[in-house]
Image (tube, rainbow, N blue to C red):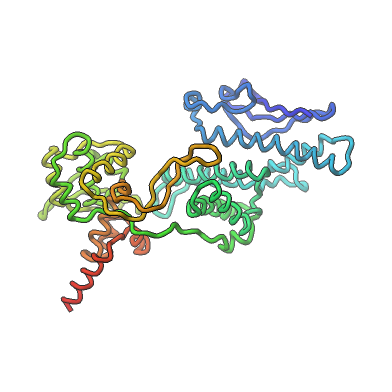
Length: 432
């Protein structure tokens, strides 16, 4: 038996990858349906994975690995089909039966139809749909959303390699859900992370059903329970801690980091806006200066936030907004800054660490008790704004600034200490 992959039309800008199977003198050629630029095809009969060559042809490492994993699976399925024929007592292997089996897996001949019930194919179709879809907010699908669905697609393709079979759209049920969560836990991932991947899978399957593909009733009836992350009080910076940071005499990277952090805590700007403050316009009315940022939730609406005294002081010192730094550097420097400031109370949280899993060095978020400065990040800004103003101004005003659509979503950002809540209740009682 010989299995070979090659390109059907290597002279074209894009060529389909073809599988050639030779069994006892019988030969068969099967299209995999996978297409690549010929320059990315390697002598090892797989797609090249070098960053430089992939970038020249607008392909990512994730996409290349995805195609290679599909080829590995197809090769394995040929071996499985031959093994089944031998176990059934067939001395003469029929290459046509092997070809029919592979074509069924790829969505070809199946009871005289052209159905394709592959989960991976359904997810690819949904991602293509999302690229041109417009959400309820009138905006196109965000790059982060597309990234999440591509991550889920890659995860399902990898899982097919683990279980050594293709996954049908009807295979995803409660049993599949439990098995996948257990597999991810064994690989060192949190159940809530695996649950997020399954959320993408469920969304793709519901879309696939609308396109006429069969899915399991467990998906249709919402029987695959979402696993929520463990709840604990997240790191936020209080007004007193922000005052302390402003009083510090800093220069260089820590001065820029401190100023960006303080601005974020008083404006609730998303990190994408915080790191390109030069695009954020400052307006003025009879009450003073304020910023205006277009909402990412509702097209054509704007979020307006007055400038706190700290923000005004920072702008005065820099003659405008402070210079930006990258998200990665900000998250690195902000921990150094808060450690220097003595913001080190012990609290529960998660810290990214390198662990050895199955002999490989892998980054994972590890829960435990840590000094507060270890838990501060760019997301601390929006959490701090919501927490510091909760109970001080109407909840609807906080939601307008943070851009949350519901109070339930907002409450995920509120991380007040028990003593802060107690003081607010006592103050309210005194007014009654």
